[in-house]
Length: 104
Length: 169
Image 1: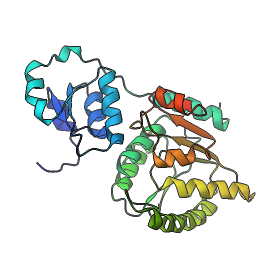
Image 2: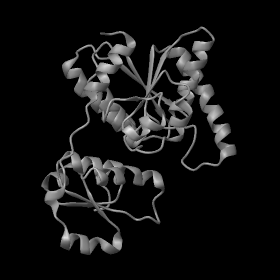
Image 3: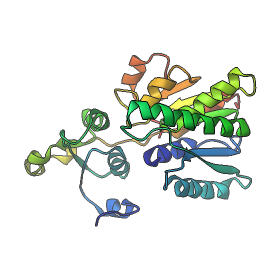
């Protein structure tokens, strides 16, 4: 398919996700607890988009490769090395904001 | 726009109903945010019966990679619109997370404060996508916001006046 409103259904059914380094794609996949390989195309992307993918890789949440090394990565990958991605905590933001505006 | 809207709605997800009414401001060229916001508010109204919100569109101040000179003109145009809107709404709190649309709104809120019309607290939350560098909006508003929140420790080191609460979206 070309475009869907939501990939949520496909994500739930997937065992492995291979994606570009877009933040939305990465985070949505990780939040559903699916193993993720990020394919980085250094020629297309500007540095800003790479920041999150690099950090997620440093933290052990994703594997990464480029277009030419994808096959090799798929053959030699060990998904058990991936660390679980904990969800963000908007409740911490709420607590902070309550203090700031004086709603304690 | 898009990812920014999703992030800001997550930020709002744990706020109490004291944060009411909520006035959402987004670019007139943004086709998707309205649906996301309505969906969020509809879910919210199931828990909080007296939920109030409004939707407000302003001209987009800058397209991605728009040239410097034309950006100045379009930003000024957005600022005029934002000034009128902010004057009408007179917010107590301005919460934003980085799209170009937020700069004119924050500038308007600052101006209203300086002129003694209404002093708003300006809270900026940098996107979770920003790990090592700030967005252009962030670089500007770091100096003009009351609270500047980052979601990765590297940014807290580079921008010591920022607040770091961990990942909050």
